[in-house]
Length: 336
Image (cartoon, rainbow, N blue to C red; front, side, top):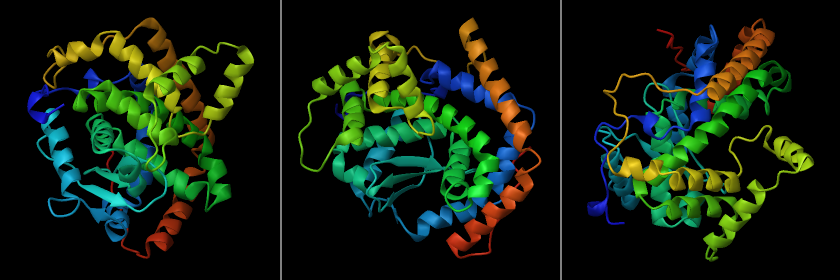
C-alpha cells in the first residue's frame, strides 16, 4: 500500500496491539518484588555505552546515506505510529534471518544482513515495525537482558548459566508472548496482513530467489494448530522450551485470529487506546490466573538464585569486558 494511502495512528498506545498473554506475563514479571531491579542492575553493569559500542564497532548504521531505502522505511513506520524520534538502526553481518531491539535508555534496532537479502522491501518494513513495537511497548530492557544471558551466561560460563537459567527461562517464556504482540504492530504499519505473514514464512524457511506460496504455509499453520493429540502437545512444549521465538506457523495462526476477530480493522478505523487514556486495562479471570501463575513460578526461581546473582553478574561482566576489548563499562542504576 502506498504510504499516502495508509491510516495513521496519532498518539497510539502500544497497548492497542499488545497480546493479552504478553501483558499477563510481563506484568507478572514486573510485580515480583525486586525482580525488575535485579534485571536492571545486571544489565546496568554493561551500560548503554558498552552495548551500543558493540554494534557501532561491527555493524553499519542506517541513514539517508547508508541503506537509504531502509532509512526511508524506518521513517515511514515512525510516522505511522506517531513516533517523533526514530531509533538508531544498524545492519549487522549475519547468516541468521533475524532482527532485534536492544538497549536501556535509548533502544536501537539491529537488522541481520540476511534479513534484507531473504525478505522483500515491504517485508523488511514489517520487520522494522515489529521492532518499533518492541521499543514502544517497553520490551527493550528485558530483551537486552535476554541477549546478555544467551550470549554469555550459557555459552561462556556454564556454571554461571546454571545459576541464571531459571531467570532465563522466565524471560524466554515472556519473550515468546511479546513476539505475538509485535507481529500485530508489523501488520498495523504495512496495513496488509499477508506482508507480515509472508515475512514470517520466509524467516522460517526462505532462500534467496526461491518463490514461496503463502496459502500453502497458512494451510501448514492450520494443520499444526489443529493437532490436539496429547503426545503432540508434549512434543510441541519440549520444542518450544528454550526457544526465543514462537514457531512461525503459530505466529501466522495468531495473526489470522486477530485479523479475523475484527481488532485489526477496528484500529484501522481509529478506534484504539491512546497514550492519554488512563483507564484500567480489562483483564479476564483466566488472564489473572495466568499472571498469578507466572508470578508464582518466577518468584520461586528468583528466590533460588538470589544468593548467587552477585557472583554471576561479576563473571558475566568480566566476560563482556574481554569480548568488547574495553574496561570502560558504565554501571547505571535504573531502579528509580
